[in-house]
Image (cartoon, rainbow, N blue to C red; front, side):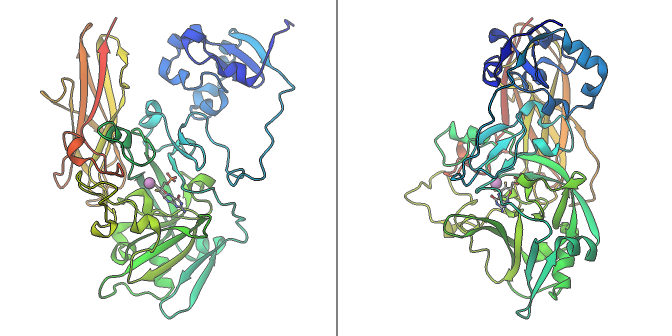
Length: 466
Ligand SMILES: Nc1nc2c(c(=O)[nH]1)N[C@H]1C(S)=C(S)[C@@H](COP(=O)(O)O)O[C@H]1N2
Ligand SMILES: [Mo]
């Protein structure tokens, strides 16, 4: 057998682009797949996501790679082996994030500790349901380690008593209800806002949004079981607390109006399943709230407590964050009490393919993207322009028809158009929801200091080249 040179993972990691060669690993073998990049049936952009690292996490997402001919084909590109004496990094006992779970290498990381990451735009709209490993993650704190057999959910009842539910009781006492819902962070597309003027927050691109099929107990059923009525007079809120707490001991918390929590049509879940498997640790294992149609911040993960109160959650994230302000408000003048907490989100859309700055071949160009609106409002149309918004075409919407007012999941859309060599395109998309709400055409008039609610027409410039 031929003997191969040995490389460290770090050395492999330096080969991430056709200019520096494209290396990948499979098992302990190292391959130089530079010459295969253009031949990749799934497109060069997809194989480049794995450049410099292991193929396995990406192959796990696409079943075709499991076929024997794929490994055979790969074998011809073998250039080396991973050195066997590479020491794994020792965990740091002082690091509060040392117990965080492993993550998919394809995620675009915006912050490592706490972990915040989005799926790469190339993969974002490839599937209607986002694979769990690629679902965007928004953590404010370290991921709590929960022992499922000792987990208890505490529900404060109306008469001062408390209901304590084990995971097994939550699963067996209440009917399992399933909902396909998109979660979107208030900060999705923030990086476009910070190009207008700096804002405070993580620099999300277009991927702080993902869709899953959630399974769990209805929050409504649990609250009725705890003794709460269908309706309460006056203003009431259902408050949630997570098991993750800041160094001062304050848990992550949020609340939603009582009416939404009790409404059978609002489909609010205490979810223990995500796309048919138990919740992954990053997404709230073992139980999280899922509030369809509402900003992601209210879907509290690692849920430990539910309480009903005449006031909204006292949490910083309900009171002093996730609120929208006028462009004239700055950090010297902001008064958080003057704005309502964000709940239902406005209509949103983005182009996921092609990517900004891409050179696309002449002929037929397929533009792809997502569109979604809050409050269960269905996306009824997506308009796409190739000339910066002077002329428009209507994209083809894909996805199942939802019951009226309960369109909790995004619509994926596509448009194929002829394009000519030597032209520059400014691709623009904008969606319309069932209330005929539309997106604003530009960012500056909706700029706000926290960079939330960034929903302007999405613009992507590309050039058409042979
Ligand atoms: N306990 C807890 N719940 C949480 C958060 C958190 O940091 N801690 N982040 C919130 C925010 S801001 C968002 S956008 C969603 C993200 O959910 P995901 O990480 O499953 O995508 O979780 C929400 N629930
Ligand atoms: Mo968020």
